Length: 398
Image (cartoon, rainbow, N blue to C red; front, side, top):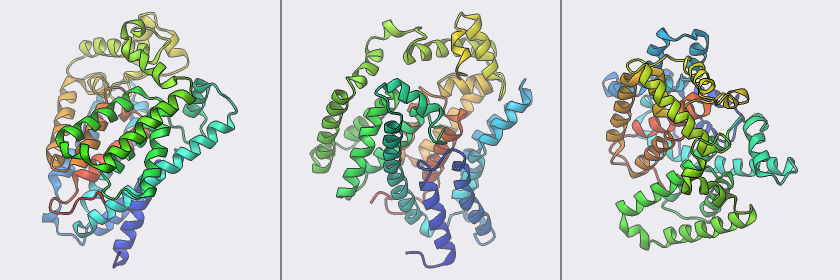
């Protein structure tokens, strides 16, 4: 329990961060403010020598990479808007770095509890919303979730990212209470309903990683129970939604039928990846600059006979690595990969942190997460939460 006003204030700040999945789009950025304000207030009472300035500098360098590319952008107004959107990569390293080490783990535990419960509550919000649409057309429901979802403005891909992280957090829970099992089942069911292929594949790979790195877990009753529940849910979801899940994954199994097909999500991604790769070769060193890439991609889509992909949606590269190459060039991409490598080495001894890190960087393959506000915040939040975790402390998974 917190003993001082400062500790109580931090407890509230971390609890607010945990509400990220459940609050509407316009409120999400403001959840970061209490942590930043508290840390700045605490700045004058901490020993400067104990603050890890190297971690702050390297972590915030993601923001600096984008900021540098703004100077040769052809769309300065859009670049400024995107730079404002990227501010979490600048403020969260400072916010977490200045949290008192003596209470950091306790605060992280509170954040994880609130975050997983928030994801569970979000599942029920989605259920109520889908029922309110009064439709059995799953794709109609998806389109409305992306555009008119009660102020959430969350695409199913980003919702699936929140849920995938929550499931990993729950897998590492030592105490498998009835509440934890209920939350796990609810989130897992909703994740399968959303049917985002990349997110589900990423989660399966993380599961295999856990098995390979700790073979004893196979004989763990709780793990066996979760696996059995997962199989039952997969079968149940497939029956309830007319094999929607299997239909979605058919695109992955029969790639040749869907590649370059602008009518399928897999086909659209293959088109965007090919066009983005070609464009990156045309400006390999520094890219096109922050804010310029969208216009460049649209022009190339039209030039290659895919004008239909520019009329309704504004597609980015749908791959964060290609997006970095287009924005900052291969020099910027190399630096970005260097930052990710630095984070990896700093968290590699924490298996929970490592699993979430791998999950996010895997999802980078299928989505330009750092182009959207929600993707920026969730990535910066978990990267920095674990990066600044004190070394000599108990595991934050309880």
